[in-house]
Image 1 (cartoon, helix red, strand yellow):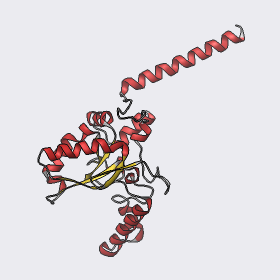
Image 2: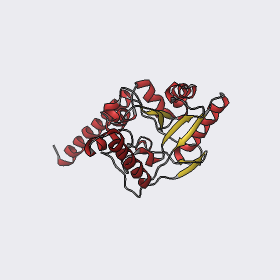
Image 3: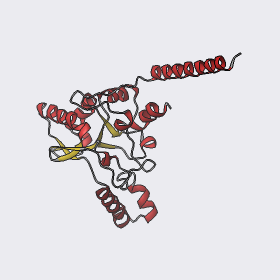
Image 4: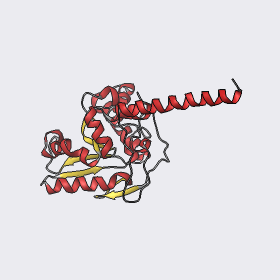
Length: 230
């Protein structure tokens, strides 16, 4: 067989393999292409589904484009849908309040150190145990998704345990309509390496949020399936 013909044959087999693999993966989970009608270019899934934790840290200089929503800085990619969510909750007569959004590296470091010291002083934990426990609720600087501006914390203006409020119930039922998911859900602590928190939500885009709810996945599981095909 001439060399040129052999090379063409091998290339054909290789590209056929790539097409088959891509088609197989697309059947296993439909990964949406995300395009914004208000002028944004198509946003890569890596941006919407970006995981920030102790294994995937960001530099102190990392800072996304920010927009202010109700006096809280939010990643511009999430701002429009977050505004719609808050307006919808208000229209339902709910007292939903946005309390945190983007957090700087320096501020996150302060929050972590404060929680670690609290555990040492008030709970009598050793430094090593305090560090481990603090990281499950307040990550270190560079290891928190609050630095992405995609992570938001809600509360009820009426106070009380948030998970027992009408505001929490409404969020659980309607968050995906606006592209948000509960970031640290129950029974997924092994995946997130964080304690359950009913107040913390993460923007992932409406199609990703719908997929995550349909498949019963937390962000970590969905990210691994979409980005790495696991």
